[in-house]
Amino acid sequence: MRRRKHLAAHLATATMLLALLLRALAGGQTKPAESETKPAGMWVNVTNNVGGPQWGYAGVMTMAAVPGADRVIAGVSEQGLWTSDDRGKSWKKLGEQDKVQIKNRPYRILFDPADANIFWESGNYEGPGVLKTTDGGKTFTPIGNLTQIDGIAIDFSDPQRKTIVVGHHEKARSIEKSSDGGQTWQPIGQKLPENTNFSNDPIIFDANTYVVNAAGWAQNAAFGIFRTEDGGATWTKVSDAGPAGVPCVASDGAIYWQTLWAKGLIKSIDKGKTWQALEGPVKDNPIELPKGKLVAPVDRQLYVSGDGGKTWQKVGPLLPFKPSGICYSQPANTIYAWRSTETKDDNVIVKWEVQ
Image (tube, rainbow, N blue to C red; front, side, top):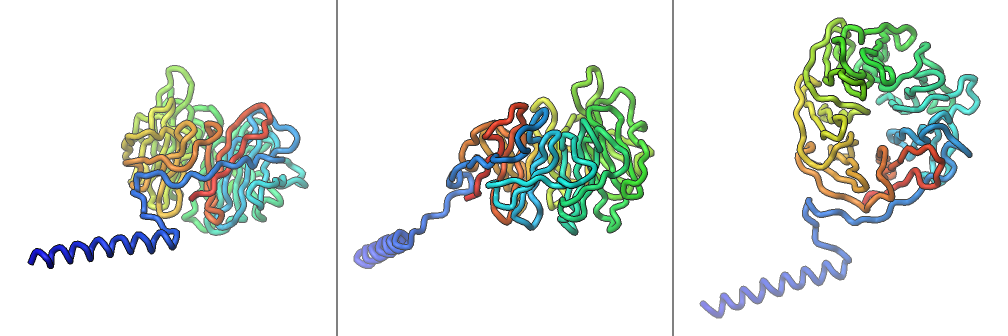
């Protein structure tokens, strides 16, 4: 009996060694635990000629990856939108022949989920606050006579895209709504409570249901999140948190939003009716990766979550700077990071090919 046990043990050991040998010959590796950092790779500078010889105020202010295409767009302060089809090696200005140029400070680029050639750009400072393209950015048309716009939200459940909601830059009770695709606008922010902070970032669920923030530097003005189910005729306060910036509305419907002054993320899974604070290191708005994973920067390090923001793990190499934002190009499996800076620099946009 003892001899049989020794023989079985030797066979098991031999089998394990053989498996390891075959794996080594094949160049394979054991699968890392979920909490381990993936292979680092490198961040590569792809600023190149973006924005032209000079730009205004804060340079690159936003970026977006075109859905389904190996193309990214950078919004440059007072210099319009610039696109790259070669992963940042070169940049070309969009709408260059337009009579009305994009002279604002880009805040958001919002793609139509049915056709990525259709997208809207919103921005503050000079010129039109909302512009739209239907040809992938060859030409742009101002939408209405709005100026000084930050956030924009569109009812994509409506095939005609009639309902659009926007928020003005650093202005309280500033929400406006269009029910005809942007031809005419009506203020609905005036129905928000008095003495609330800036309401510049809307989220839309359908033609009548929206959520807006109240947050900013206005002194003695209340923070909060407000929700309407009647197109802005009445608003209900659903949270005392003060979120700001472009929220992450994930593919499963969950909303992730950063609260001002680095107070952390909040999350809603019921279309903004209730909100909960998330623990962890992430304080900035995340973006969504494939398979529902979230990624966000913490100083110069990216963190990833695969459980809806409950836990976060470091991923990738250190960034060369603390980014103002990130975006993800799925066809290239690449994350782009940018920083806003008044002085034109040769290290403003970098990319990392996800390992």
